[in-house]
Image 1 (cartoon, helix red, strand yellow):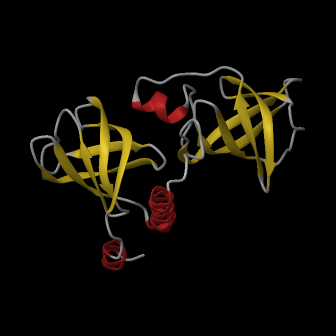
Image 2 (cartoon, helix red, strand yellow; image 1 turned 180 degrees about the vertical axis):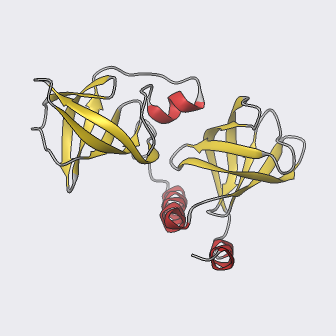
Length: 204
């Protein structure tokens, strides 16, 4: 999509007031817990302990939305706004997630997941069966509790497997892949650990 057309498409989306927890990383590597004030596929407003400088690159992990990044375009004493740099292929997907969250908030619906999952945009992973056989997979999303994988094999529900460095068992089948639940719960103190559920994955 040409840059001008993408900019026009981004302007179609309104900011939605959503109070969501998250974490952000400034360009010097400092990480902070934050609260999202409002968000759209074009931009996000963040309240946190350290405000980014104008033009500074920021990476943000937002509960229910995953990883986004962009540059600071407005700032105040305790909040700042980031102009998001979202690939065209993700704009509609992100917009649909934001719209879904706004509708759930309006309806007073409970959260659908106990642990937040994050998009992982085609990261490579390896699924190992109990007999040691390994199969390449594509990581679709991950949380501290489990992951969804695009993969050609479908081990039976309940089968013991290993995904990356984590022991797990198969919990669900879906078209083109499987979902697994980790046998141990890994925490996360850094942005990478939050996003990966405590495991190491290869982007590609």
